[in-house]
Length: 240
Ligand code: ADP
Ligand code: MG
Image 1: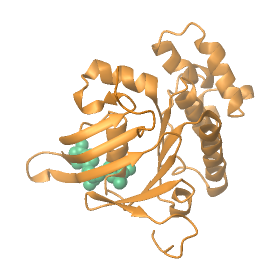
Image 2: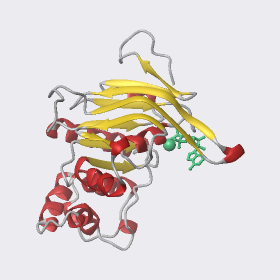
Image 3: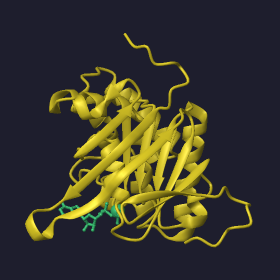
């Protein structure tokens, strides 16, 4: 049971701190981040290399734990969950897409997409995976291995795998970083279309300021803090 209103944000970070590394190598990455993302909205995250964009995304995924502060995603307080509950939470609530695709090389496209459903014990894993592959335009590639596919095709497989459990939240860490411009643009279209169709919330980390501004909101991570950037079309359009 919960007393949170239906309009509560899907993601909410309150005063989140995180340092990584040990001893003299310890780095303060996040220094008191507050952030809310409403359901069904998209958030673009930009910032210099090493500023903590991936770390921020991993905190939302429950793959990295905040040292301090509260991280809520949907009904879950990630800072209060144990490892098993966190793993269940991820399987149910989150799809993740990475820059380097992270497909299992000795599994076919279909097998890769079916993994999250099989982990969830779904008997219809392969039927659903097949439909999801078709939705990203790869029905004909179901029995091909990652090495037999182009980067753009591999990323489509990764997107199908991220979406196949129908999670409310899609997290993408530089999903176009290994793709040429045209292919990257197609991948981005695919992700925006899927999110709009399914009413998903999306958080998109990218080097590409123009791409970030296609999101409903854009923030920049810098020196452990986040700054809101003006919406696209506003006069102050000089940020990188
Ligand atoms: P970005 O995605 O913006 O390039 P990251 O979130 O990957 O940045 O990393 C932020 C900072 O944290 C970087 O300075 C990076 O070197 C450091 N960092 C990341 N992971 C670790 C770790 N496990 N131990 C120590 N430092 C780390
Ligand atoms: Mg990164």
